[in-house]
Image: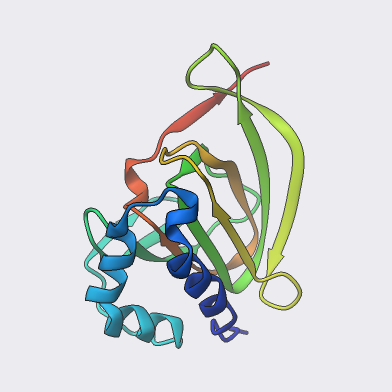
Length: 178
């Protein structure tokens, strides 16, 4: 069953209203304002938008619904496999996940000081589903792709809506330091 994505609008409005506090560039806000019709359509649950691009692998299908090179990216991910984790990866300064259907486990990691590209587990883990905990967001003070470093493991097939302050495919993957 799919859940209404309206609750996330409050989070996004807060980000837009306070972007300077977090050291974000105006590009995220300007891109959202420039493409406000599309952005609002997505927030209201109109996900019947023709994707700008599609990338698919064995784990999930990634459809870019909207993208601004120096602004934001809105992605719909359809998760096909269960109990297989994504690579360990980070995201840009702002990352927003909303579960539309399915259940997911996120495990978090932190960079190993002095060893670029390596991370250690933080011990933090959350479960996301469309009923009890549908939203995860991260807003960092530094403009890098080392924010909210995590893996996603689908527990059951489903869909998520992802919104980033910059295109997420520029992100970095990490190796686990044992």
